[in-house]
Length: 132
Image (cartoon, rainbow, N blue to C red; front, side, top):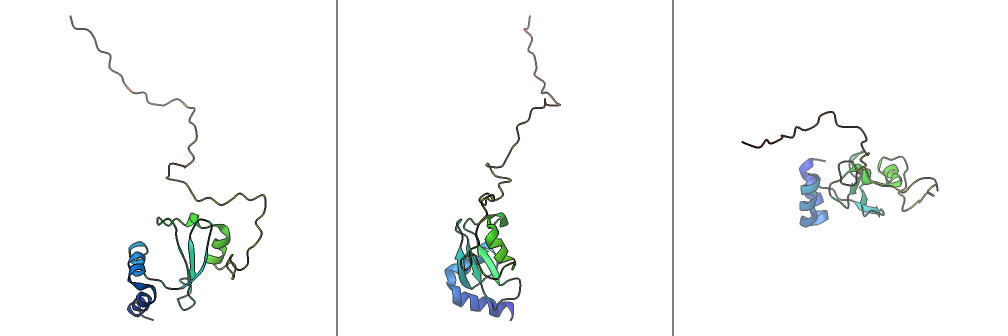
């Protein structure tokens, strides 16, 4: 199916408002069935008519769209490791596994170790003299 035909079909299915939002955030239009929503508010969609590899996608709750926002159970479904989504076949979560958190690198919550070494370069401080 050509790109223009697919785009027009998706515009009719999703409406002009959602069409504009998708073009702004992902630069493409997608229409499919909502499969589920995870605990972070991410929405997961599927469309069997799309090309393989484009048939499952996520609409992130926070629009910076970092892949580390996807929990492991949904990651398995997105990458076709399992066929059924976690909403249909929830698997038990082991007790020893910590709850999922996104990658915080580059944010204010990122881990920063305490530095105990002395600086290699010290700043020069001028000493003023009294004029006679």
